[in-house]
Image (cartoon, rainbow, N blue to C red; front, top):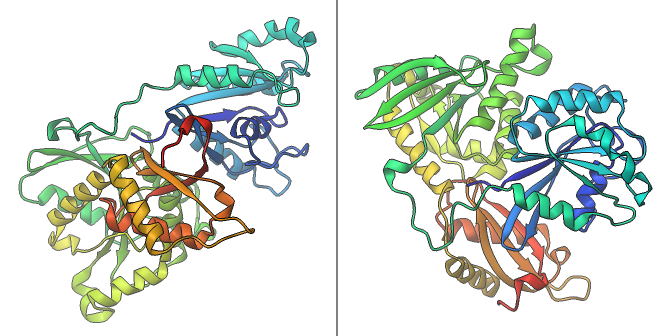
Length: 451
């Protein structure tokens, strides 16, 4: 299962970024008294004992952005809420409840997820008698904290751990039986007129496939449920995407939003290209979304019957996509002609294969053997007059495979060497065609003396 996400929300200037940095024990999110400094989602992988979760900061709800980015900030907040496992609703104990807090409360009331109300800036016990006014904001446990006075840090961590779902996998467990595999959701995205609708229609005509159209769970997309060889799938159909400046009306704008939501919902993303056209800025924007969410992806070059003669060969298309998306060289490429149903079944089979890769779990022993071989072949260089040291690695999550490497100081490892290590993991482990998240973390007392 993916790493659980604990999302910090609230109005501006209640100390959300400070709480993230406080819990992380380092500067992760920029802290400034100016409202609206945090625009994007900012996350940090947390470890407490043998549990891992991602603590995520968000922009202030209700902020009027000075650069007219309020809509973008709001979008990032909603994404974080949608993906959250637990929500920390942060308020200011010094100012008490204000109208904007009630606005946030009304919004979160519709979200059926575990919540904690965190009354921040309680620098002394003088404010304790006033906490009763916060009880009406949510049906949730209330905690008082102060970053400045270092008050309530451990209690907050304990409350978060108490709400986390129980771990579902251990390193020694075998994979689930085939009948227990979750339903595979495949998002079909791309710019307009690359053949996505034709592909959906081809699914209905492929041998041994049963297709029925049902309403999408997000109300703004259509899910096409089908079966192949006795296995159930859902294809998430999305409208074509155009350049933002070319969006003529609300319908086209929400087409872009649908595509982005479909990517987040999917287990595997099929990124469609037209074999007769070159890569566009729209394609690159969609690939950024896919990469940001670490989704397994397949490059699908459609209309191959036309492209084979008019544009490029298979090898040239492969090199062209590698050059266009240099950080996505692990992504497999499929060539299809949807209107003739050519290679449709093979594409679905490939989707199953990379979904399986994303759910793989390797043992700590296997992982550390690869780590030792990588260090032996290319040890990291001395930095800041200190020798970088690696102690051990462990896989903490799947979908995407998430690996934590314990080191003496993450700052001593160059980005180039981290890319090298990631490449070695990809070569030697069963994650060759899916994204891997790699974190270097300083060794703690809880990690013991394991080498």
